[in-house]
Length: 591
Figure 1 (cartoon, rainbow, N blue to C red):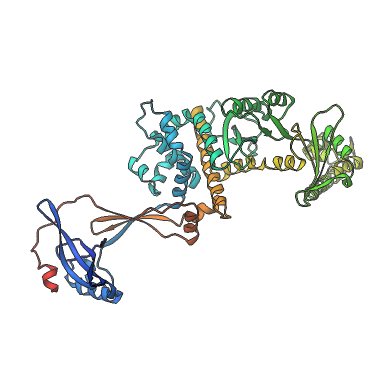
Figure 2 (figure 1 turned 120 degrees about the horizontal axis):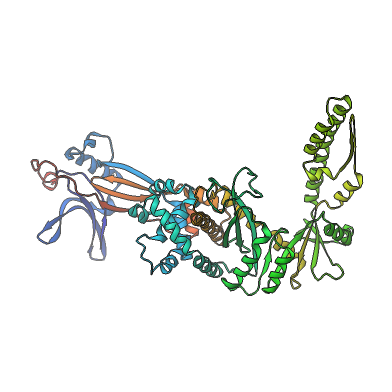
């Protein structure tokens, strides 16, 4: 049995010395002996020459090792030979690159098989770039530390993605990779749907769809328009984003629309896409009340799909349904006493309506209404005094009223009269009472007759997965601001961000499956303690990972992701040193 431990020890002549352990059997016992040896080339063969017999391996102690090193140090040409205890080896840490987060991102990427799919789709194209590799670099960057594409060219040099470092792409190559990736979008989405169906048992019996927007920098992109801004940035051009996710929040498909696209106008194309591209024969389409117009309901029915949506509680239909549900004594308890619900029907209407009551939400609704009334009362009282004193003209009073009642929800609680020099107002108690009757209530509607009331409620509440996805895209993956002006590049940028969110959800579900109660974001933060350190040791490069925190190691163990092994490679040859007098061999000097 021969074991070699790679050591670099400074001896005269600058040779590399290794520890060799040899087992020898004497009778029934086996003894291990340690030797310091060096390699020498003899003709075409490599021979080992004994430098030092350290002795029986079992009897070697750290004190003895330190004593041997101390004895050798005076013979070393290293500048550290006069230093205190320690190995006289020149060590220079060159760089530390981020390892942990990109390691789990790469594992998820490979698990989904996206790189292989890209290669298959583009195999007939004469593209010199490794599109799969560059795409992973862009997706991982969005997941770990979002940068612009120009900033990405600096970021990948500070993380441990060896193939990307070797390729050393510039910003223009990343742009070309974006164009090629967009060509693969449809195939990737179909492939990912199949993979997550197998990996996470996704049956697509429920799909969730919603629309959001993100503001835009620049004025030349044809997709950018002014519209209803969910970011509260009406001063900015924007694009609209459509996203379909599964019941576990895994993104299946994404779309980019012009910035002024209305929610309802995007549904029919998405429904047809689910049928044609993904081959989903039956599903329940879950969307908010802005999605399901009468036209969209007809489209869903034509495809054999069902739906779950909501009805405005304070609209005419909503108030009618609340009245039909009656007092709370007729409601049933669902979701561990946190919610009451009652199913009601309307004559001549085949839809199911479920009126729900949440006491927590009722407190919020009541408090918000009271604060709106109190703020309006203060301003209306001040306006009344100002008009009566003559300080405010009729025209200015009308302008002030328009400002006070700019919130339509406040306007419905008051009636007022305004004339030159006179202003009066009062509360509409009946309107307040009608509003209070709807506090805490929300109404769901569905045409699915074969699912229980509780499942309808929980399914609609799971629409929060889409909202969470948009929140992650905007706040952590940083889809905005969008600086691209080319329409295709804008679409590719959004797709890269969605793929990044996909990796995040895969990581989170994998952690949950391994029994770790930790979010993907927290896991990525913990994994930052794992670095790949590049050190120079006497003419060699040593690449080795740090131990990282205990939690980081537990995460990798739970995900069954091994740390890369340390590797030692020779530095490129440099100019040979000046010849010098050859000293006596260490072997002769020590023996």
